Length: 487
Image (cartoon, rainbow, N blue to C red; front, side, top):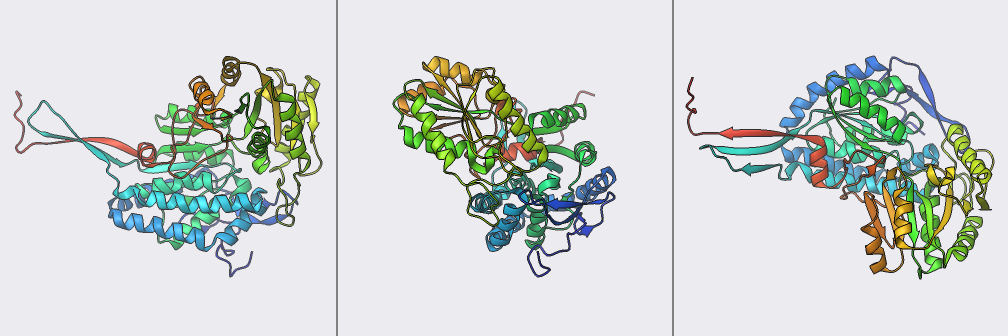
């Protein structure tokens, strides 16, 4: 990218601590997954960088918390407008760095804009209660900023999954340490640093610290950090949660999913397979809400499998920066190997490959596997790739048992008769249930989260959930005179 672009080149080889500075660790290449080419270099933060950043953040936060609500809201509104103003450049980074198609990139930028506008309402939102008391006094519960919030974000939707915590945390008077995934630290980190600096956010309130395990551990353990907002795999989330628990810090975990799409008897097969294809293959299946299990009533099972496979055969795969494609690359070699291994193991366990397969190079085609047993690895595991495993059911009770047998509980879609779907919705354990929609859905004002191994009950989005996540409750009492005591 040119020096005259909005992002510029000042971030090359740097981390962001209020200004672009050298990190203590070596720099690393930002890789385009479709081609393997370097798009630039970033600095990598280590524990010393993080601890210094936490100290700066804590100092800056004290003044920010005193800032009038209207001023904080104005910064968030300006940030929202800047996402729209620079959407083309930022979208291009999302396409090249994350491997997303243009529509996905546009969704991320427009969502960032809306999240900032939603967050702009938080500074003036009521944040307390007047309580009753048996004493002759006034009694209040008020919400105050948590202090320093660490945000750890993943590679798949790097902008949305950063901004959805960064924006409300800042709006509510906190400072933020953002650790984006190193694979997508430009679109999930540099862009936020530039947008909020341009919007007038005071220095030190947002610091961007890409790095490896050492940096991740430090943004959790730094003494100034009081809240951790983590989005990522269940395995990594367990480690973050264990560390936060030992340190007595609040930790909001939004983790993986193996989400079921249930197709009821009598459902229109054409629209159902369209929904199922989007749910499984949007962004190459690299979404926590991806449709990982298609559970189809036995009366329409064969027709559904064939129509879904036909959709798979007609979806183009390639480099979204240079071609009109529906699916781009898998993020890196490690993830590609994992996806291909699961496809191979699924077939070895008896699954029937109807369309797609392991593919070559950076790309895995949209794949349909049919006739899976409940123990098949493609049915039980979160694949995080463009694979649609399909199985059948006969009764609603059987469908609910198959859905709930998973250790995950993030999202469920139910397609077909609304009355039947409502009955089934009451039987499933999931943070989200979408009737006559697939499993991938989110909005800026929605309290988003899952159950079981998909998270610890925390929610992001919407005023109530964000205030709960990023503030603390303080009890305040007041008397007209000093209270009498027996001592």
